[in-house]
Length: 561
Image (cartoon, rainbow, N blue to C red; front, side, top):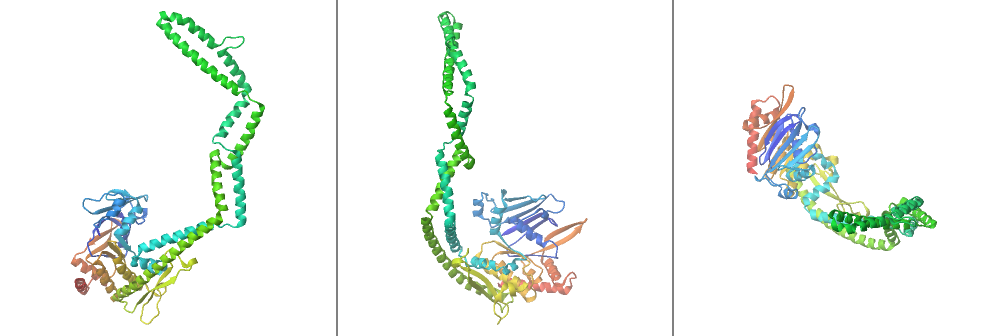
């Protein structure tokens, strides 16, 4: 249940606090006073779409805060939101002038999608156009399924139907024509053989490219390497650096017994000799690598041509190998498609059989629910001054392969006849605006026992009704409010009289700016507002007396029910 709604800088409302109560909360006011803004604020606080246009002109932001007493503990745990120690739920939503929106629950920031999920469990908003939803026959099955309460059976069917469709798609993928299949086999075999012949090794292209670069510059390198090697190791006509360092070490070694400084120099010469020997050994290895035949360069060029062609077509060595493995798998699938198709067709038949069985069970459940729904809705409509109405749930089979659709084998359409003796027809062809509003209210009243939403909001559900019909709508709302909190925006005194709490929306102009206030009315205030709703701007004494009589009659009705 919503306890408090705080609105700040939304359209013409600069600031307003509305303290809702149990039962029926009614909001009335002149057209354009701002009643729809209250509904917009409720929509925003439950995750509805918002835009910067809602921000009051000249303000930097708009904000809505709501306090609920029915805490959605499962949602809080799932979304990592700490419960408030008061046991209440605090929701805030701030919309900046640039259109950005920030949502918080108990102070914790959450995305709007999570707020929508929470909001659907807190408030059910029935807007001015919801009656028109009855014109959409695609929604009728959803109404019936919601009423029937067989959600698990419906979900089980959907899972079974999806498994069938998935297997069907796999079969279609494998069922290519023979010409296309033969072409694909030829392409795959050629590509696989081409990559296999290359005998790829990861990194080989870079390694051989470096070797080729070395061989191409071998003549330049050989002289330098030979000269450096002789300088270190010596030649036929020269003594190398290693021998000279060795002589210096030996000369100082005997003298180092008498000098600590000389002993340190001997150690350094020893290290230098070892280093020089290591360098000369490495130069010998390099020199040996520079010894190659012209045939080696030709072989390198041939191998590099093969590798470069493969890399251009398939990517790096590792990517080419991966491409080959995928090609082998696809080739195996195509060549073995006959066996796979047989297996898949058996699985698909099994899934189809299961889906048909579950669809049949759904149809049985829907027929039982439809009989009950028809009876309850006609009872509700009879109480809403539509005693001659006949309401029917009509079934047709889905027109598709195997007679199955996403929701089973049934298509559902609501039919009605407004007067006794008339044949039922489609609601979207014969129902007036007032009849649509009352049928929707009847459905809401019937469905309310099947839903857990704490608060129901009706935005001008009185559209198209008047007189006795309006009186019955008010009574029905009062009865619904005995089970759930109801918020209702209305223009009709018959409905406003049934309120447990009555708010008046007033618009005024000050210093060139428009302001809207929301005021809770006492008994005298309610009389005056009912008189205005009945007689217009000029409220007479007789209108006030009539309003008092309406309030008295409404109280008697509520006490009796």
